[in-house]
Length: 77
Image 1 (cartoon, one colour):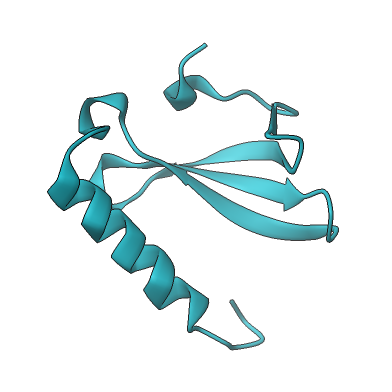
Image 2: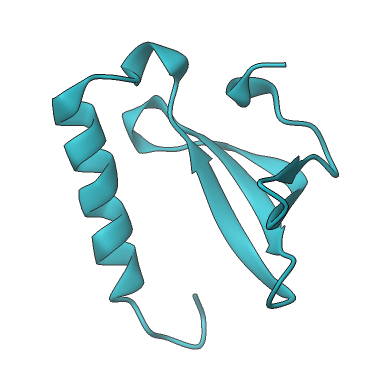
């Protein structure tokens, strides 16, 4: 199974469980609804396409998006 083919109930690093695939995101990512098992909360899991592993520019953009998302605080998101 590749990272692009995560199935329902798949557990990642013992921390996150896949609930369902939500679609495609920016940078060609696959987006999943997941559950943070340690904190019992919903999370969004974005998986980069394997072809982008090792691409420094794409990795930097991906990490920048994570940093920006961490700054968002609103009850509706």
